[in-house]
Image (cartoon, rainbow, N blue to C red; front, side):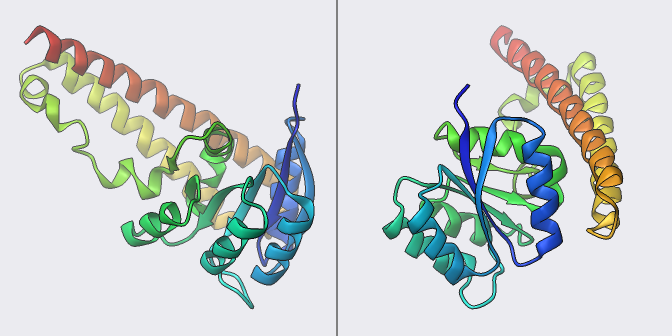
Length: 218
């Protein structure tokens, strides 16, 4: 199995430690370095040439956005996944414009970290939940006419919303825990969030699949 080389960039040391431990448990990633500010991130990216950089947007000395610009020059093959507390459309657009492969909101790290990393590594664009589908409940509006007259769709939609609510509650609990918890507790909450997120995906796929069937049948 090919191991992906990772550079973690965040100004909070304890947060980097937690992310490092979570990644190491999978056995698929090699943490080749860490950086606590934007200038250090650029220097280490140029030296280490990582496959993927987890890059905080809010960094001292040099912002994550500016660091991304410079990293693109010193290590153009490295893929970048922004980790941000700013879910705005402007921030998302700027991230992709600079060549980042994804934007992961901090509240989504617990449920979507591995999914986001896999997508970016595979060359896909990724926008996490708090920057995408929670903000757009009508994203499947092409199927709206069939949706409104289909009892099964309404039932599946209800199940999806319940799964989303459960996931968001667990993410909120993890966010409240912050970095003060011991890793064992954090890891348990992280795993619960991952499981809840998978339930969201299953419920969403069932709903969208049924909507597509109804749309195709007219």
